[in-house]
Length: 245
Ligand code: ADP
Ligand code: MG
Image (cartoon, rainbow, N blue to C red; front, top):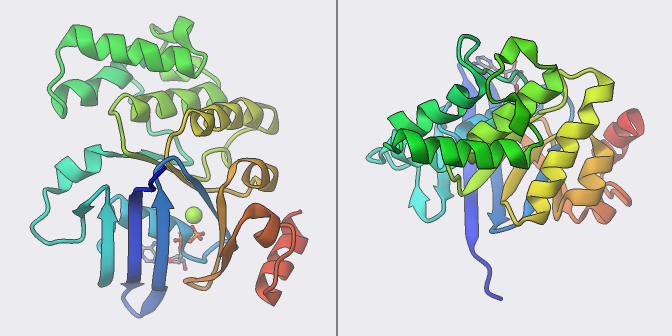
């Protein structure tokens, strides 16, 4: 089977004023792959994801998502962004809208889907994350784990080429983490292309095709989970893992 590169980042540099946060990042995600990014706080993981989703503008380097160069100044940013699903640590749901409405708003506004189609897609994705019975609830009536699963279903409803996750379970009470990871695991099994920043080493170990260790704005080490988590070669990776494992 031929591979298809869905995300290609090359030579990416990002600075905030004097602070150089990304110092030349290269990375590739093939269709159907799960790439997990691990690394200490402040190493630039969120900034990297935010560049891939065009929430930050890099100073240098190139990002291609499913064949379109999103760092091209002439790119249709909104069009490109609809193909990239993003799930944050904070769920960012609309608190005054029902769960179903949270899932249909962008489908209708951005993808111009009719009400019926948008609701059909929304219900499919709510069922997928195990929340079919919650469509009429308000976000505040749900647990944090349920809200995060709604956020995942909302992103899926846009039919993204790739899903970006930035520490999706970090804000959750420990007993709610498992349900969110189970949904992500299932997505991975269904062949969704995923780029995941996580501190959940067990998840990375079991689900990732490639693990990438970042520190100080560079990719220090990357490879299979067995290589990077099981048998790290670099001192910085060993030190980090000894703290989190
Ligand atoms: P991580 O997600 O790995 O913890 P981040 O990408 O959030 O790291 O942050 C990397 C560095 O960039 C940190 O030093 C952070 O303070 C800084 N940073 C992130 N966003 C901004 C911003 N908008 N303005 C200034 N500095 C920022
Ligand atoms: Mg972060």
